[in-house]
Length: 245
Image (cartoon, rainbow, N blue to C red):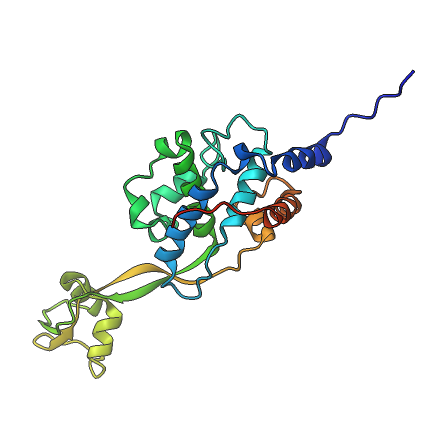
């Protein structure tokens, strides 16, 4: 009597699914969309301090790992952002955590919660955005307005630099810089100011690796870095699709 081979489960079974994805047109279907969307993010963020262009192959590896090359979510939610109970998509679109600085203008008005959980291309764009949002380092900085005119404000009784800044659309830092000798305000004094505001800005970036992706995107799977490395190695060996840029 023939002895049946033990059924493979867990990581070994996952590997078989990923191995079968190599060269299968279905699992390479989003290559051009991934490349195009990653390029849009790279162009948008290239002027920020320390930004390193994102490799589109990392995103493809994420999609393979997130779906396991067998999920029925492949046609609607390939990068698995916006699933029930997952706060990532709402965090990205709310803008409170820096999503408004990350999402390119071409996606800003198109990407919505509804579209991201039903349209696979929007889902990929949202997943890339969330990963980059979690990878950026932010700070509140004094940002000068495009109007470089130096204005004057007369100090009134009860005024403070903070009050004058708020009233005139400037900041404490700008007023102090333009009026270094004014340590104690008196009614009648004239302060110089320029238009400015305090804004959240990107000041640096964390290095993106398979380990950092696991930490910032999917911390629930202890094998996630290992799976990403495996998928990425297969993707690098395969021939990339030629896509119009």
